[in-house]
Image (cartoon, rainbow, N blue to C red; front, side, top):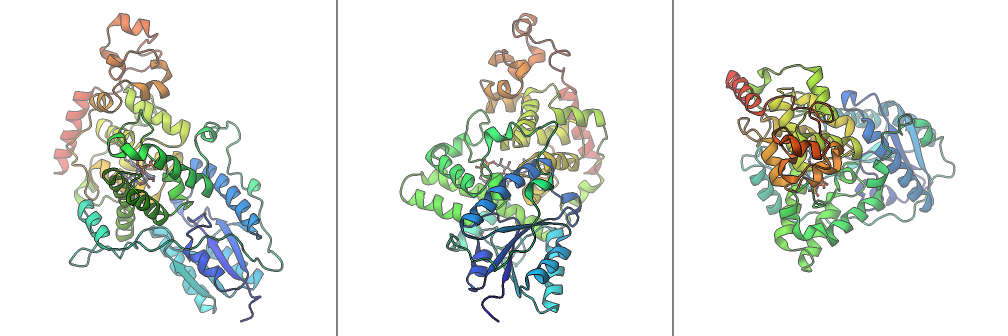
Length: 480
Ligand SMILES: Cc1cc2nc3c(=O)[nH]c(=O)nc-3n(C[C@H](O)[C@H](O)[C@H](O)COP(=O)(O)OP(=O)(O)OC[C@H]3O[C@@H](n4cnc5c(N)ncnc54)[C@H](O)[C@@H]3O)c2cc1C
């Protein structure tokens, strides 16, 4: 084949030029490389991008497009069913070989398998690589050869696996084809909200793109990494990396993170005790991917069968109060409002609000999962699904159902001065720490001084904690 025949590289969840194994493999053919991103709203079904992800995607593609331009080429944008768009583009440019990094959710595996088969039937070569995980979901196996259902032995096995692959050389220069195929304009895709612009405050918090990802990692290693183990549970502190949306969109790979963190640990810049806990969280992500890969219906069906008959309630009113951060439980409301304001929520608070939805309100975990799917900038088919099942007690290695988070004591423990609540629930900004997590117990004069009128400026609790707890335990008894 002539070296002027182009090959196609399909960007999916790997929006980066560094450590991109399939892109590197495409470049190494020595043929011109056409790069494409396809906005496919059809194939994913209910796993199509949510609103917050659209915002991130726009910004990330904008940044990637500029990087590719600087490298001397052009990113092609197309919209539609990828299984039609990719073969059409191959025809348009006369490519003989397609490259992509693998994906692991059910709809993705099925779509990729079908496309690969039909391309190969047409004599188009397909090369796929692992650009998303430290190890493939089928690499980490129990002694009997099956997938792990418990995290700790999974983590031990991952570490025992030996060597995470080396990063592949980043791409600084790209030879495109002699003429480029037609491309959509990013701004025509309408990914950014207009009126109202609910994402305005996202701009203050996030820097989507590969550069932003590396900056986030650097900031983390220069600061919070030193005390990660202790501070990672404190929503009132900047104790975590905030790498999750960057990892979701593949602006940084876990392999890059692994090596950079390990190097810092070896150099004594990050204490082993802290770095190891951080890497174990990155391994939770691997665990989630292993779970969804081996349990492809997990975003719809509980892993533990007995939970498939759980008597979930339906209440639009309660669901909306939860979504809007109007439950009357300050730590829950702060979390839900952080989610709306920033498209992100601290992990500890995700656990508190998740537990509140499924246990205090007895609403179906899938309602929570889908709300997160729409509102999180890091909405991730593996982490979101596995975490919701974990919190609902029906997933792998899950928190036992009967262990019900108490939102007051959780608030007092992890936000002891109430700073997190004050930041996101402005009505309570003048409440003293002693009463900030239980305003309904505060003396009248304290409420008055803080300008709080329960039921008017801030809601009364929508359920009573003790009763809600008992109702949850009764519901659990019915399926036991
Ligand atoms: C109900 C619920 C829903 C969640 N939905 C998502 C989601 O859609 N997308 C998502 O990326 N994470 C999700 N998480 C996991 C976790 O909350 C976030 O990954 C974390 O808060 C991201 O912040 P960070 O990057 O600062 O994390 P750090 O503490 O800095 O951790 C580094 C990285 O490790 C991974 N990680 C950390 N904690 C977990 C975890 N518990 N499970 C899996 N991976 C983890 C993430 O990729 C994260 O970016 C969810 C958790 C809960 C309880």
